[in-house]
Amino acid sequence: MKEPHKSGQLFKEAQRYLPGGVDSPVRAFKAVGGTPRFIVKGKGSRIYDADGNGYVDYVGSWGPLILGHARREITSSLKQAVMRGTSFGAATELETRLARIICAAMPSLQMLRFVSSGTEATMTAIRLARAFTGRDRIVKFAGCYHGHSDGLLVSAGSGMATLGIPDSPGILRQVAQNTLVAPYNDVESVQHIFDKYPAQIAAVIIEPVAANMGVVHPARGFLSNLRKLTKKYGVLLIFDEVITGFRVSYGGAQQLYGINPDLTCLGKIIGGGLPVGAYGGRREIMQMVAPCGKVYQAGTLSGNPLAMTAGIETLNILSNPQIYRQLEERTAALQDGIAEEACKARLPLNISRAASLLTVFFTEAEVTDYESACKSDSALFARFFRGLLNNGVYWPPSQFEAAFVSLAHSPQDIQSTIRAMGRAFKSL
Ligand code: KE4
Image 1 (spheres, rainbow, N blue to C red):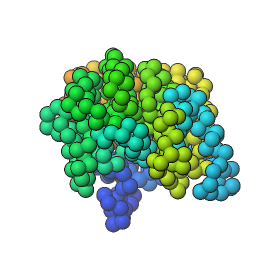
Image 2: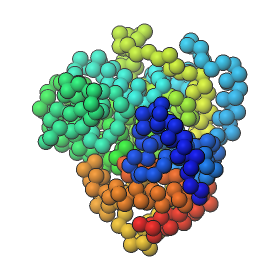
Image 3: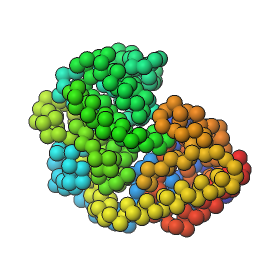
């Protein structure tokens, strides 16, 4: 492994023009230390940095690249598409084609609208829920991340069911106070909020399998009880499936758990690595969106022909059920190998996996919500991350993220990752 001199130089120069030298905070390696790698190329399961180092990649652009980097079908269809122009700001048949594929995979989406990021999707879904119900407040769960719109960058106030507090400077208290925060997997706390704010709650938004506090499963019955409760109180249930959509199954978490949300937010995989987001759901709700209805939302590059092309190609490949069986096998093998190496190193870890999503929590406590996730030893995780990086494995640079296994991760990649894990554990 060569020292990241070139990445260091590029990082220094980048910091002159970009805050923190990056365009998204997690890329700066603040949580794990060391020089962020500047990537020049990705192919299959690997990425290559400016110093010529290759890594087995478990970030996969934070989820979109379930087929791996530069998958031939996608790059060749994009090459043809780009020769026809990159964007028109006008309707294309491609948007209808991708929408038809998504609605067929997730029947709760009777209609949808494409946008250019997951943030836009969740931000608009909240606006739509407020318009449809005529109510102001929303409920989110501690540890769930739904993008950076003001009303969703909110932490739990002190004590149960109190008004949210801004997660960032620049967010108005008045805005944050319309967001109530409950502990994940605690449906009683949601009932308490509904009782405390009767007929004021427009929607509950949730990551049906949480991946932004590390991977945290919904407890048995949690999602179905949440669905029953929201229906009873006339509150819309919004599934944020930006990560889980087409990841935990072809039909997302809603197919896996048999839940019909009122609205769903998507992103990442449906764009095959190009900028994309989408929100959709019940027709009577979606028909409130302009120009059908009065809820305004717009976007210069929404439904962009390149993103649509990459999304169509990706979902066509994913429609083969064999794909998910292979992803399941590979990720289960990785999980077992990590557990074995941790046992050899006498390290108390908690490995949480949902399909091809996986988090190694440096705590032996069971992780069921944000509070228990925070019991992990982030300093130890940072040393683990650096150990892996020095052994040719690019793991997500934060304890509170998920690792993503792709179809391009071969059995040999999995075995070499397990060996790297063993060496990294020994270095702790
Ligand atoms: P974007 O605006 O980043 O496209 O999507 C926001 C978003 C919404 N909902 C969920 C469940 C998400 O995970 C995300 C974004 N995910 C992070 C990774 N945890 C993106 C990586 C980053 O912020 O750089």
